[in-house]
Image 1: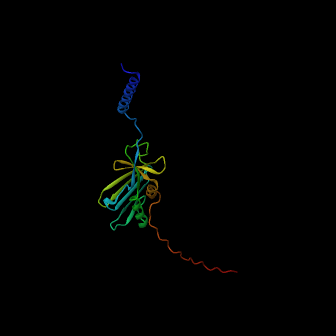
Image 2: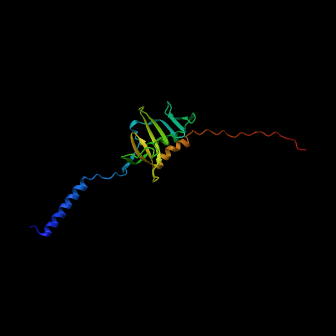
Image 3: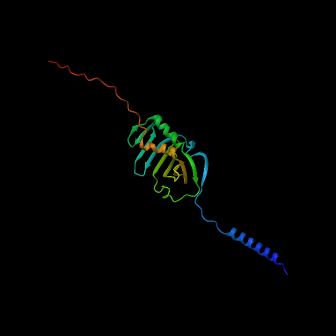
Length: 194
């Protein structure tokens, strides 16, 4: 006959083995998508060459469109046809290559939840090699550090300050300064005093 302490030890061992198999086979609960940190990467690279066209459209239908002319200078075609301030346009081009990726979402929340259905802004970029890339900008993240952006089938969080610099073009297009004409003197007719 088996002694009582040995029997208790066998029962405890059987319970531990049963618990192991139960916990091992049990499915894990679904968790919220976890963003993956990216080390100082940029959304757009110069792989396709220089920018030749920029089109920014907001959800209200406001639009900015500018492109390079035959001589390589920037010119605005929307909201109105006008010459562009070349230094401001070059700074804008630089901002597109400085869109800093904070995170890439491995699994995306519903697009309407993150402001991408419909997007708040749609940005279409044309490059020297005739490729075209489209960015859709959604809502500000709950932490306020960035915006949700859909680009080439993936959802990213882009640094807020870098995307605000780009979206600022829509509010303040880079118009070329118009020269101010010099003031001219208007002669005052002489009057006789009594």
